[in-house]
Image (cartoon, rainbow, N blue to C red; front, side, top):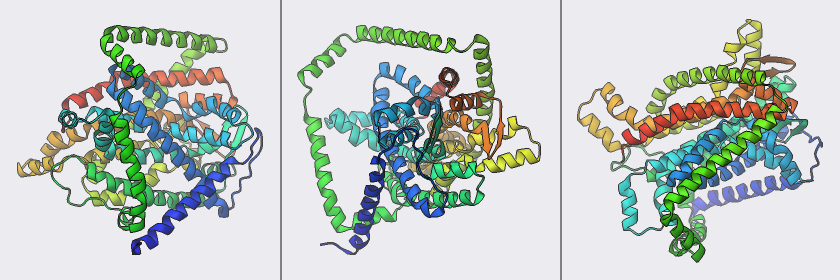
Length: 566
């Protein structure tokens, strides 16, 4: 029989299902290219706009999880795939969101001709590109850090690859993945203005949502509307935290790998409610049983004859296939380079290419300086928060809100301050690049510090190590992999944010800093595809070089030297 917990849980679940059903129905209405969608700055519409933005965020998050579980897993388990997939991931995370929109928006509108699904899919895809890469990097890195004895235990228990994935690999990576998902959701909020107010190559689409509401408020210099948007975002992010992420953080605590229990594990009233509601618990037994049955079915299936032959061929001719894979990669990269060069050189001269490379160097200098400054500030703060679960619970929604806060809302302050005090645009627009991405460092360090084995911390205290010795011998080595992940994603995010931050608009006033981000933003608005492609490739090239020469070496160093669980 239902108990008193069901009286709260059932209306909550039914209410969520009704809201999702109503919101998803809005995306199937007819839409034709060039049609102007009504969008009002009346605050009465903000709840509807908030719901539609949230549904886009949820859809993008689900696609990001699917991408993470497939792409990162394959990269972590195959050396040949890793050599190709990780550099590709580096490139993808460096491609500006406006670049993705330039390429995809027309295709999505044509694909879902006559339906709102076209622009909705373009917006969801743009949000996906601001979330998926960070999550994939986190999951890939966690898989690489799984101790070998856990794999040996899985082998002893005769777990199939499918069972090993769900019973060992996903649980091990879950705490870091949850924190990175939170950060990725915040990253999605940061770019929601660009995702919902699409202005690419003659396409001007304002999808009903908070992002487009902010874009219109900025264009009309309506500070009151911006205030309403900030208040709505705070409410939505708080609900997001209470209903989704806080239960996930509390649930993921059970997967921490340590032998000493934490003093104060994070809790969640939603998780408690769902666990104690008898009817909900009874209803959940159905999907649980189906899930367990699917695991047994997939895990017990023998490879079909064609798959078995392919596996046997791979095992037998491994050296030959490795050589073939290398040649195919070289041929593919060469062909893509030749095609790209012919496409760009038809419109752009060598002098302009050199100028774009110089612009990239200027933006690179800004990114390196800003990421270094952010690390100096947020690593100590993240360690302090991560080792205190109660503080982490209190800080979590505030950090999420600050991380999600669109830099566009600070444009008025930046423009007014720079114009009034005659400040140098090249310097004072730069902080806008790191405003949204510095939180990657904080969230990853919190995640890294929160999973530091409590038994090691107790041993360090019992041995009488001083604070500096604990930092040097335990904390810094323990959080180093998380720091590298945070620094890498913040680095890529700062490059991406440069497209938004190097050209700032407030009403009819426009301030432009010299850099590659400004170049891409201007060419995107103009719809000059060869120059957009040139800007994106140069940006990707810089990110790739930095990642190969710096971040990847740090990754290997962290994997070999600082795996406390290995």
